[in-house]
Image (tube, rainbow, N blue to C red):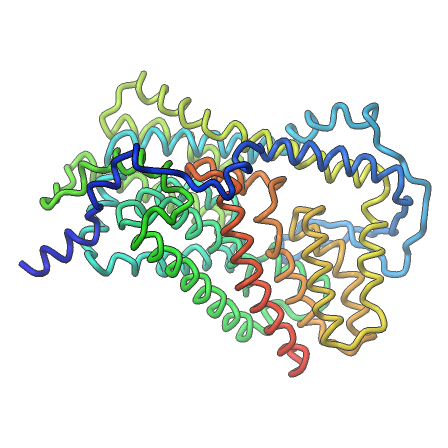
Length: 497
């Protein structure tokens, strides 16, 4: 009997939490809700365009190299010491008026994968199988349901650390958010569990081919070298991330009105209220089959990425078939299946537009010949400094540069040819420099409004972007940066190689 009460208490939500009239959203950050990230990106585009009239042009000479870490792909590699100032090409309206369309075409693969993912999961969730399965799991764990959070953090972090999982983690938001609500937490917990884990896992990685792999190849250090220290750092990062999320989760569970998602979650909780009963309804055969097919589809996608080298063409196609077949198996009619897919796609339109708009910033800096100038000035800050300060500046340079390059492998090809030989002059191990670069790729990129993936995850989670941004920024400055800085200092002092 006591065990029965404990299980019910784990997912039982006070009755007054459904009283929407009692909910008053905090006003402290309310004004930010009226600012759409697209407005911010548009403002940044205008400022960057104006900056091209001020920043002098410059170019590094480049040579093409084959990156074994990416299966023989090629990258254009900067030749150290080859920078020369050139004439800039200011980017006014005449130069950038077609840039958005060019960005949309460039990002079409990821954009349509997000559309198909959102549509598929909305249709699958409409069968009721996912909701019933999640609540069954939460009630089965009872008062120990919180254990699922660190388990998920380490699982998603492992995906980021091994094969560079990031964009392909987006659909899991649609699973983790309902699970968080079923455990008595809020939508932010589900969002953080997915996004924090893959972002930190990918940058504190020990095998990620796009980050560590390319970085080591370009720094000319043995592949997979130093893996023991990297695994230890990854474990520390994942444990710290789990602790941060759990601390937040218990805070909002003990006092739901402290949650920035409180008002929005009232409506979501009402949808799941039927499951918060003392008597647990078992899964039907149809629902069990839906969950099996869903797991099989996700497993196929992950296996395809790791083993067969699948990317967005294949990932999007998997979501397409999942969005058609699984909802029909789950009992939806053809018309219902199509309607739910379209409904899901409509929720991420803003995110897709943001992904296209973010490409404009990079295009402006590249076409104006100012991208290399910015990198030249950033790298110039590394000279004539003590080793410990130099490695922290390398970390900072990588963190800032990632905001403009927006590709870890692309940033490696841009920075490592400069940082690796500079490390020799400063008597810093190249392995440590690779770590500074890798950790820098995960500092700011996932907390800025012009990175469309951030907004896509927030849209699917039903969390206002700036409310997420507040939590993410707090995590970055209180957890991620301090741990990264301490790790890099220790690597430098003990000559990590």
